[in-house]
Image (tube, rainbow, N blue to C red; front, side, top):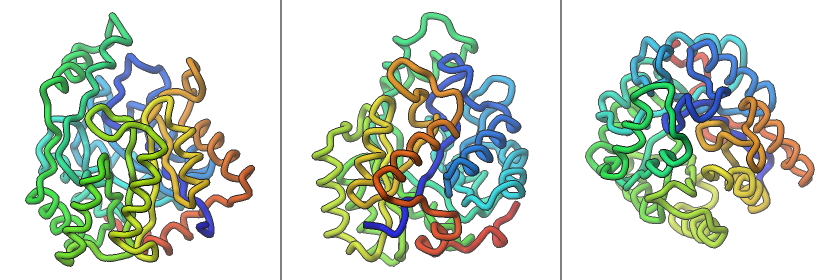
Length: 310
């Protein structure tokens, strides 16, 4: 079992749209407030996307990120993780723009191309606040989220090597672990590294406990348990059960409105902090402790908050 459980919170993401929940952070002020509250509730890593403050559409512009990154750093000791997923349909340069500008301690990186189907969310609503929402969701019926070996290598070098940023390697399928192993063997990924196993996205692994156990065992075999930290996130209704399973199996976990808008069946979460408090209580009731940002930094060998660019 780990010394403590690292909780990551992803406050807004680039999948859900404003129509889906009035509690989804959109503006820089809302994202900053949500992140600070999540950190106060027990999250040691904050995984961040930005949105156009007028429309809520995913926004890759560094200037938008700079409206909330300094506030989060000043108000908390949490590790700031800038997503390179940004928004579906963006180029890798667009996806890297905010992270290379901010030079954060961590950034996310998807480890393989995949069908990324969020079009079933169209069935949830008949009216939309913004025209871009149904168009954005609908286009994923005929869409591949590209993360080729060339673009992954580009990100590892442009952000990892040049900025000393470490990655949250997002693995949506078994093959993505083998992609990580390839880059480990090439010397482009060095331990300790952070594997985020993602379940429940249409086009990726289903949220089945057998899959989680198999991925964990495979990662141990590929990397050696001493060389990496692993975490689990699951979409929608699977969020809390899978986060709990990860803690029980000795892993870390991620929650946040990026991954699920709900706190219970049919009940919208009113904040990211509400989800963090819920999973923290579960973790502590299991007799485990929650990692501090300092513990997360030490276990992931991060460069420290004083070495970022914001």
